[in-house]
Image (cartoon, rainbow, N blue to C red; front, side, top):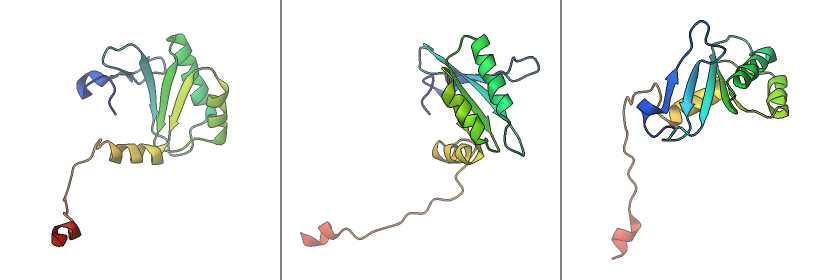
Length: 127
């Protein structure tokens, strides 16, 4: 998506026991002037709003202003209401949006086949 200048320098996975509610970080630009913190959850059901509150608290403890909460499932309306009511900027990405972004930026995908579709160039025949 253009963060950090290169894929290698764009971010870092942290998520282990005792990570303080932060699974990864993204450098927002090549110089690393700002950092975006990430929380990722693989859930079968909607992510409870308490998880979003905990993430907001983790951001506060890091003196961070920006975060992205990613899930393979969905978020309840209360989660969107919560992130809209706080000062910190938290983006919620559900499974559907995650899939769209994966396709858009070719993350975790490989090209199987490419089809070329041709169209008659009518300008060619007018000469």
